Length: 288
Ligand SMILES: Nc1ncnc2c1ncn2[C@@H]1O[C@H](COP(=O)(O)OP(=O)(O)OP(=O)(O)O)[C@@H](O)[C@H]1O
Ligand SMILES: [Mg+2]
Image (cartoon, rainbow, N blue to C red; front, side, top):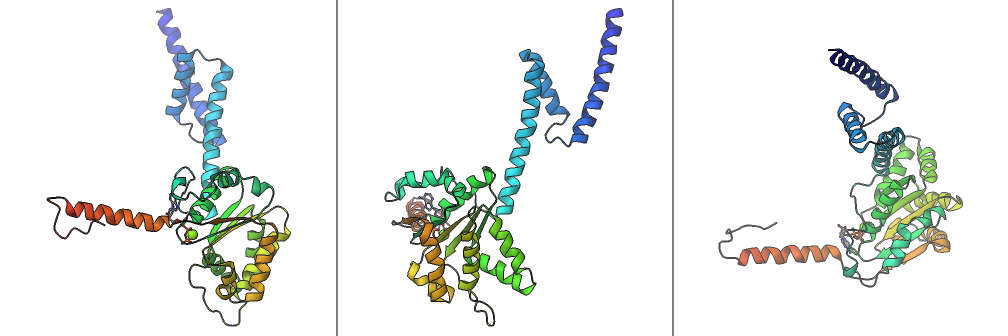
């Protein structure tokens, strides 16, 4: 009887501890530490006969890990990256002239620490955006402030600043990023804007600002020849000034090879034809 009472007392004391524990967890805003998870930790400690230190380390390690994941996730969202491209998914064999070691060295992010710029050129579909998006993703995970924008979107963003008088603020914000990726220079029609600075002008101000700053890296991809930038951006002299700044320090990577997009399209077509040729294939199936 005495034994039973002491067990009941124990369990009441434990229940009260649980209530207080839950309150502490809520007050501290500890993520991912609901009752169920807390139970898991305690059961683990009992089954492993873990020390108090080991239990504390496990619980706090779990919370810290979740916080880190959320922070990275927030950074990725803020960066403007939509597709989550990775180097693990990159088929190196498809692009044999591309030096894998150079890309992997870039993906170790030392260039951001050294504030070096990158300039990726090559024909359409060769993987320029894929590689830079993968590097941007890693940079987010490593805690850098990253922004990814296609050139047309970046220019729209800056022009919008002229309309509502936030241009300087936008420029300064872009200037503070550890890594700014300006993707696809040469792709997409730039709007003609009367009575406003040219696209070349806008881009120049930004690149110049970032270039002056010894702690920021800018990465640019382009599928048009550098000599065609002037025509694309609407001012040959200023485009040359941009390229001059980039040429001074940028790490250049030219991807000389086939288009993966076309490869995918060919594969799809091959599969479609194969399905069509199979007996019993549905008449008129588009296969797409
Ligand atoms: N070697 C590769 N392995 C796997 N996927 C690839 C490879 N190269 C490109 N891709 C994929 O092919 C598509 C086109 O690649 P990407 O957008 O990187 O080309 P790009 O060089 O930026 O072309 P563009 O100049 O037209 O912008 C993307 O979906 C990308 O993930
Ligand atoms: Mg691209």
